[in-house]
Amino acid sequence: MDADRVTLACATAAELRAARRARVGSALRPAGRDRARRHACRRRARRGALGGTVTRRAWRAAGDDPRRRGDCRLRRGAPALARAHRRGRSRSRERASRPHRPAARRAAGRERHPGAAAERNRGRRQARRRLRLARARARFRSRAARGRACSLGRTARARMARRGGGGLAVKQVLLAAPRSFCAGVDRAIEIVEILLAEHGPPVYVRHQIVHNDHVVRRLEGLGAVFVDHEDEIPSGAICVLSAHGVAPSVKESCEQRGLVVVDAVCPLVSKVHAEARRYADSGHVVALVGHMDHVEVIGTRGERPEQTVVIESPEDAAKLDPGGKPVAVITQTTLSLDDVAETVDALGERFGDLKRPAADDICYATQNRQDAVKALAERGASLILVIGSETSSNARRLVEVAQRSGAEALLIDGESGIEPDLLSGHETVGLTAGASTPEELVALVLRSLASLGYD
Image 1 (spheres, rainbow, N blue to C red):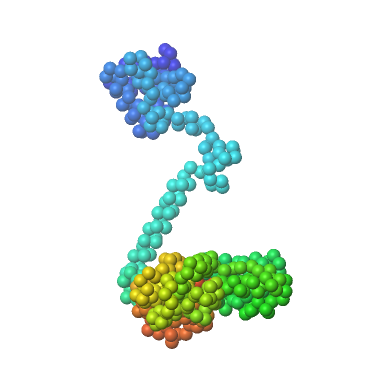
Image 2 (image 1 turned 90 degrees about the horizontal axis):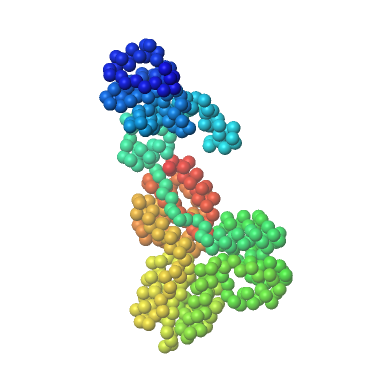
């Protein structure tokens, strides 16, 4: 009897068992010893007894194709791929004879996850561990929800109170976004820092580079020297012009003194300067809406001083006499949007052919920060703290916007301006910072508020 090919036409399962007991060929036994594989082999034998032919071959005796298994059913004399292979059982001996895949990858130097163990059940153990941790966290949360909030931290207690659980009165801080440095301020400070790093101190800066005392003191510590007039700068030295912009006469004076001029003016301020020149040269009277004593307004008005009139309020708009010339309006970039709209509307009522300011004359950073303050008031902040210096126009405008939104507002220079008496009666406090205020001050104020019980 050929051991490689034994053909049986089994009428019953009993005859198959009898043939097994007679040990007719070792290839009759299935590859595995588990019960499921034995039952599968019996089912295939029964199907063969009903008209097919069950062919037994020794392992790898079915030809060159390693996928062909000894247990395959022959139909009309043509071999077919074994169903056992499609279920993944036909490769069991092949897997046993070859190295484990992760180990082979490590040997080849292309391990999928370097340092991971090659053991097969590691993923299952990790999954079970994650499941245990998730169940433990769920049990902990359920215990806390049943009244054990006292064992939680301050942040978790605040979260539960905001959800309405536990009945805890929570003090919270709402942080505005965006806040702190705008792009123009960041650019101006970076210019001074680069000059100090490349050329060394001293680097002279005409006027404060930005209106924030903390920034000025830090740059002074690095070697910057701040002056109010270019006459105080020695000849041949570096002179940085502030982000607020200057009049053309200042640049001419610096050149006459032989100074190396570096202009750090904000690009949005430069755009307003260009509009002032264009309107004045086309025969318009330029109505500059802004504060008379602000350094930005002084610089913008210096572009065409004879044709430019500063308008601070709707009352000033009622007094404007253009002498029959058309009127064009430009604005200071750091004003309140409400103030600008009120003044421009007053001018529009008097002059029907008024050239109104462009939509982006108010700096987008100023507008975004004012919108964020309004959002704080809408979310329930009864007190809004604005971090900034008294000399900062945009910080003072944020205070005004907060007050118009129905909240109390306070301008503070840093964490030293926070006193418990000021916060009494306010469970929800909003916090923002002017465009010239560094983010480090915001972090210090948050730490101070946390020490007073605010989350």
